[in-house]
Amino acid sequence: MTAALQGQLSRDPHGRLVYTDAQGMVHVGVQAVRAFPIEAPQEGLSIVGPDGHELEWVDRWGELGGSAQDLIAQELAQREFMPTIERLVAVSTFSTPSTWTVETDRGRTDFILKGEEDIRRLRDGGLLITDNHGLVFRVLDLKTMDRATRKLLDRFL
Image 1 (cartoon, helix red, strand yellow):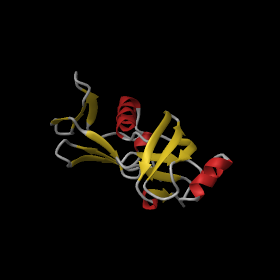
Image 2 (cartoon, rainbow, N blue to C red):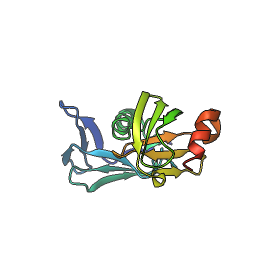
Image 3 (cartoon, one colour):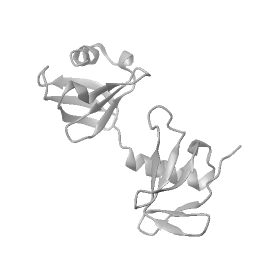
Image 4 (cartoon, rainbow, N blue to C red):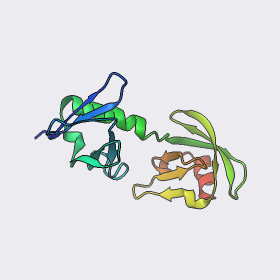
């Protein structure tokens, strides 16, 4: 069974997401926000107005049909930029703060790790690593990383 929104989603000429609620009220510049982006990415989504108030809750947005699901997926891709670390090339020092050079799915980059508390283990064997600017990098599965990367990461875990 396909789920449906109570309202409608569209884009305005400026590319902003627009939500028209069941009463016909138009909300320009809304955002799609996942409740559990890592643990349950297809479940629990809120359509939030520009004032920060929830306009609609969707239990399983992955089951929405047609253009609503496409618009939400596009919006989430812009909002949830999270490069995946494929390889740890080098670290400047084994104490923090330290500069890390990494290969990601978006290319090579450097970032500063402020402290070990900025590395968070996930239940699925992955990691979330937050740099000094608040950008979050993801390691999908520590066990699948090459030996040199695992050895470097072990010094911080």
